[in-house]
Amino acid sequence: MTAVNPAGAWTKIRITGLTCGDNCYLRIQPIDGGEANEVMCSAELCTPWFEGQALAAGVTDKAWEVQMGTLDQLDNEGTVMDDNFPAIIALREAT
Image 1 (cartoon, rainbow, N blue to C red):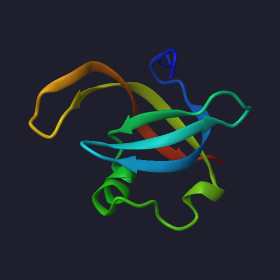
Image 2 (cartoon, rainbow, N blue to C red):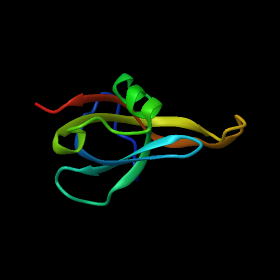
Image 3 (cartoon, one colour):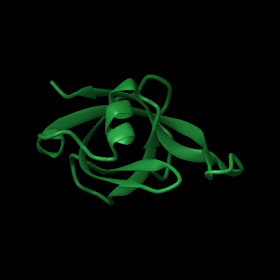
């Protein structure tokens, strides 16, 4: 993401993929078009996807709303690689 949403702002996105390495990242794309981005996620809904290193069935078929922020990006040894990495801090299914 090129900019962090103002506090409380919700943005509609599609989740298009999941990549796991030292961390797991969601690949998201704005509903209204635009560039896809890989972001970290601290929202509770992401936990089972990250633990299983796979998206649940139907996740990519839905529209979602996210609140964006930043997290520390750590490697497997706990070293901070980026202290301002784009991240989903809240996630809900779009209505």
